[in-house]
Structures are given as C-alpha cells and as structure tokens.
Amino acid sequence: MKPAPQRILIVKLSSLGDVVHAMPAVQDLRRAFPHAQIDWVVEAAFAPLVARCEGVQQVIPCALRQWRKSPFKAETRRAWRAFKAQLQAQAYDAIIDLQGLSKSALVSWLARTTSGGKRYGLANQTEGSGFEAPARWVADVAIEIEPHVHAVQRSRILCAAGLGYALQGPAHCGLRPGGLASLQPASQGENPFVPKKAVVALVHGTSRADKEWSQASWVALGRRLNHAGFAVALPHGNAAEKATSEAIAAQLTDAWVWPAMALDAMTDTLAHCAGVVGVDSGVSHIAVALDLPHVQIYNFDTAWRTGPEVRAGTDEATAPRLPLRQVSVYGQPQPTVDAVWEAWDSLATPVLCR
Image 1 (cartoon, rainbow, N blue to C red):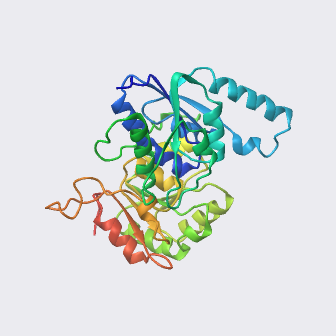
Image 2: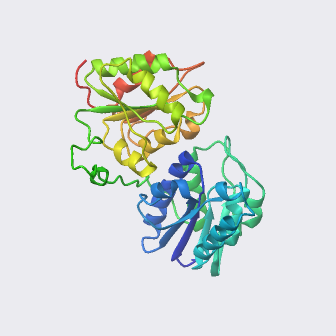
Image 3: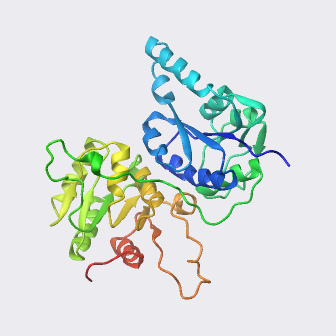
C-alpha cells in the first residue's frame, strides 16, 4: 500500500465553468487524505474563486493567456520567472493535471515532485472536452476515462483512480461564499448589494452567441417572476451584456441591473439570491456550486455533460420523489418560456404567490 500523499497539486487553469467543475475532486481528496496540503494552479482571473474552495491551501495564479500575447516583453519575462519560483517552491507527492491540454501539461512538467512523487493525467479525450497529447506524455500515470462522462465526474474519477481511493456520495463543490460586509460603500449608507426581498438572478450572458436565450424570453420569464413576488437581478460581464440587462430591466416592474463586480463579489452576491435561472455559462455553474435553486438553459443536448447533476435520493426510483434544487432544460432551437417556468416552479424553492 503506497503512503498517503502529503502535498497535492491540482492543475486546472481555465475556463470558469471548468474550474468550478473541478472543485468536487478537491473535496474527495480532502476526505481521502485529510492531512494533505492541496494547492491549485489556475489562471489569475479565476484565482479569487479557487481561494473560496474548501481545502485549497495555496492558490498559485498563472497568467498564460496574457503572457502568450506578449511573450518577449520584459514584464512578461519577470512575471513568468516569479510564477516558476512560486510553482517550484516546494515539491509535491502528486501533481494532477485535470485539464489535459498542452498548457496544463507544461505547468505539470515544470512543477517539482518529491523523490517518490508522480504526475497524473488523462490518457484519452472525453466527449465534448479538449485533449492534447502532451498531457499524456508528461504524466507518469495516465488514467483512461470512459468517454461519455460528466465533466464533474471526469475530474473525480481521475483523482480517485490515480491516488487509489473510492468515490463516496454525490459531488460537493465546497465553494464558500463570503459575506457582503466587504462590499459596504465607504459612505456607510445602505448597502446596495443586500437584497430587500427574494431575488432571482437571470444570467443571460455567455461566451457563445449560440448558447443565448432570446431577450423576449428573458422578459417574459422576468414578468412571471415579478408576478410570483420575486425581484429580478441582472448581472453582466461586459458592456454588451450590460446593455442587454438594461433592456430587459426596462420592461419589468421589479428588476435590478447589478453593477460591474469582480468574480468573488459576484459569487458573494449571487449566494444571497433565492435562485438563479441562466444559460450554460460560468456564472450558472457557480450557482450550482453554491447549491442555489437553479434552472440551466440549453440550446444543445449537452446538459448530460455540464449541467446540474441529479443528486442521490431524487431519482425516479425514489418514492415519494423529492423536489430537485437544480435542473437543466433543453430545447431546439431554444427552450420555451413555458418549459423554463415549469422547471423553475418544480424546484425546491419558495414561491411567494401563485
């Protein structure tokens, strides 16, 4: 029997949703090796979120996306040297590449192992996920994964198979929201982030136009939520999304366009919502990680891979059937407003009036 690892390094650099999907693997590692130090290398933009993941002792930020835009600048070279120094400051018993790309393989290769330490990685591509051969070449132990697998389970299976423990129970992200006190305006006035009534966040922004839901659908859903007694919050990540939020809010009786905020502040504010309805996006995956009542909207039949997982005790064999907290809705070309509303109405969440 091999000794329990004392230091474990997770390499999962991006993107936002993928980072969130890797968090349950950390919780499994904590359960299997409660005395181990777990560090995580991640793109700097997502470091504040990873810092909220229970069990992560040190977050090592990496700005590969930025550095490769200007690799020969003196500033880039200084930042790269500083990153390598932090990465190699200590050796690890297990370095686990959960991404399976050339960039994550490079980070895994640069990180130091102890004398008996090993690098673990993927041996093959899974459906809907990227994979590049260097990830397999760098790994001392390459784990083959069933191709048709949920993104959360892919990371959990890789860690468990590599380090020799059995998975137990449903996935748990361990994402800790902070309080809203840090967001208090300097004027000591009323904190605008604190909801005055039950709020449902509508997450319409996504990195791909073909994942979007129509603006008319968001307005129709917002009106139903207002009629049910909920206020509507509209987050945004850029100028175009802000314009969409404002256009939706203008057609509702009780809607709030959130101000621009950093990822950690977004997480904290989202945690105070009564629920979230959103497209397939990083912010929607944060809602799942926070265990908020949530409906996730899909224009493609890929919810099996990235959508909310059905928790144990809520399958069809369970009697009486328990209400779900999170569901996905798929439709072509887009799910209807009625389908999304029916999904929301079925959740284990308070409905103020019907």
